[in-house]
Length: 409
Ligand SMILES: [Fe+2]
Image 1: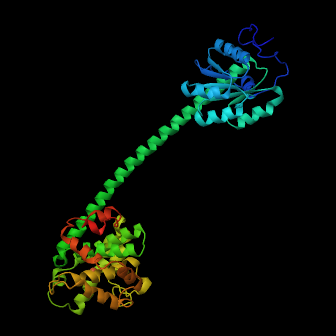
Image 2 (image 1 turned 180 degrees about the vertical axis):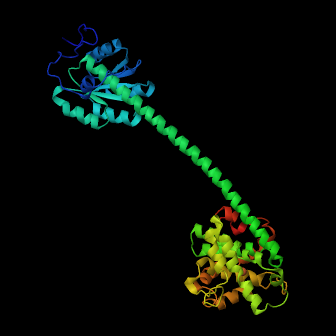
Image 3 (image 1 turned 90 degrees about the vertical axis):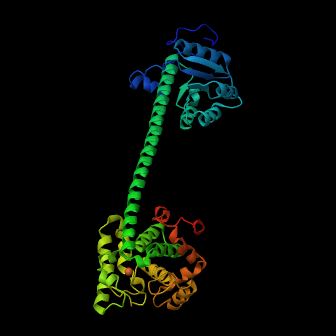
């Protein structure tokens, strides 16, 4: 029967040839025989691409009778032009097209509209091309002469597969949105927790200041000094935070000292001095119990150790002393010399620089002093000058202890 002759009813139609008895089992045919009937697609929009007008017309007629909405074009280029202005759910394309062939059209459609079902039609002697097309993204291949039942079943199967893919994709996107939403909620909750940690630190710092008013602001300044040195040494942000908290709370153990010792105007007796030295252990025991401060407790315990082993409580030497405490030693000396004390006024920073330089390698770790002197000299007076502006534990800790530039105060 010629393609332009009268067609038999859909479902029994043979397109461009006779019904074959020795069938080639395409995936569509397998679906017909091995699976339950596939639910027909509701008025799916199909584009038929074939350079033979009669073949296009015939297939369109068959598919229209099966309730598909069909359009036809004679080339790949025409197909792309039509797809730019008209959405189609599926394409049935002859592989052997002049100009842009079926494989090239397939690649372009996959690039532009991956959700469109794409079926290729190939000759019986070119089944390999059909298989290759499926490997390249086609949803099925049809062997000519086309049989109406096969075409319709293959189309429904491909459309159903595409619908499922879109549902899966929609679910995946929904999951991603859900994950993003939950992540935001967790981040907000963590912010609240962090804020409450900061409030706790603030309260502890205020308690230390109240207990030892003579050195008001000392903890905050040594904390900032130590951070600048830690940054210059290239330590990690985690270390910055640990050193910041440890430096801020280093004298928390003094809260337990009796006034008779802490506020004694004259020199301490040997016994009183030994008792005073216990504040490092008291502070350590206290801070160690607080989970979010536990890492900082080592600095609290070792903040009076000295590089040459002459410090207390354990007489640790050099690398036996945690890096945070070695940094703290320099920061503490800098602040002690350059701030007012009950028994003398603040001394110039140049005096502190000389002492730190002289004692490098004896009281202070040479690596720490090298980092200290690598920074501009004006760094330290600038930090010390913030004492009256920093009324509360500020953003340096919230931002990991490093983000506040000197120019901001
Ligand atoms: Fe201390």
